[in-house]
Amino acid sequence: MRFGFSTAGESHGPAEVALVHGVPAGLGLLAEDVNRDLARRQQGYGRGGRQKIERDQAEFLGGVRHGYTLGSPVAMLVRNKDYANWEHRMSPAPVEDPPDPITLPRPGHADLAGMQKYAFDDLRNVLERSSARETTARVAAGGIARKLLAEFGVEIHSAVYRIGAVAYPKEKAAENAARADESDVRCPDPEVTEEMKAEIDAARYARDALGGEFVVVARGCPPGLGSYVDWRDKIDARLAAAVMSINAIKGVEVGMGFGVAAHRSSEVQDEILAGNGHLERASNRLGGIEGGMTNGEPVLVSAAMKPISTISKQLRTVDISTGDETKAFKERADSCAVPAAAVIGESMVAVVLAEAFLEKFGADNMADIHAAHDAYARRLSEAGVAAR
Ligand code: EPS
Image (cartoon, rainbow, N blue to C red; front, side, top):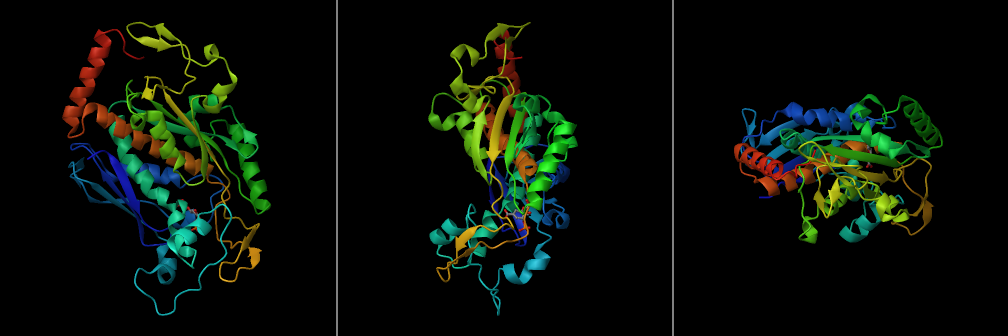
């Protein structure tokens, strides 16, 4: 089966679950490989009270033995500690005195369309699953993809280059993304970090929330992941879909992205130069992807996140139980989750690249994949067309 994953779990239910299929046999995998990213996802200035409750840790339930994958699906469980406070409201079994339904949909959230689509009169049935808590399971799955890619020298980082009105150059953010973990907002510049934090404080003080932009950088990808042959195989299309699927993302760009439209061709393409025993590029404006395939340059995918829709400055809505105009309900929430979204972006990029990697080099066991990868590198090198 192709590499990929499904998730299950409600935000205040017992646990988040990831089922990762298509993982080759023989990949070294420990809980800490996954837990490192789970902890990074929980960080970021502007998070609400929930992250003080949770200490996300993955438990392997299947697919791993004595530290190595078996080729069978890898099942992971991350418990929601907050469930202890929600047992009655979120009990899988029927309860005698059910809680009052929530009937005031938040503009911008899945509440209204979700209730219309699934015939609910209690919005909690929608918001529990549409909550970004689900991204815990995505990051657990991404941890396996990263571990696989790391064996072949692929490293993935991310950086935030905008929070509200405070911006930092995207190119510099991409270049210095490996240092972003040092910043509370994942911006590699200490001064801009402080400005971004002040921007978040100001929004929170105004009972509002902020969005922003982040870039994910994948270095070390071999050329030829994805394909130009069929639209479904194009790696940029697959990356865009995966990153767009992250909660609250409203735009995805590759390389210069929308910026390409304002320039002449000679200002957009990346010229090919003869390096020493390999080919080099004069620039990386197209974000490491040409014709739906990686070209060996760093893959650069960036995204814009809208401000969180759960805000205490309540917006107008209609009470679906009465039809009367009123104000949307408010719950404890984050005031900015862009730094967390960047880590989730890394995970989604890792999953797509791992899937394409295994399409190219086989997927049964690590020894065969290494052999195919080495043979490809050798062929490119002998033909004088290896990437840097
Ligand atoms: C979320 C609301 C908040 C966030 C949550 C996403 O949770 P709660 O309603 O429990 O305060 O903290 O994100 C997470 C729990 C997480 O782990 O990322 C929402 O409505 O989307």
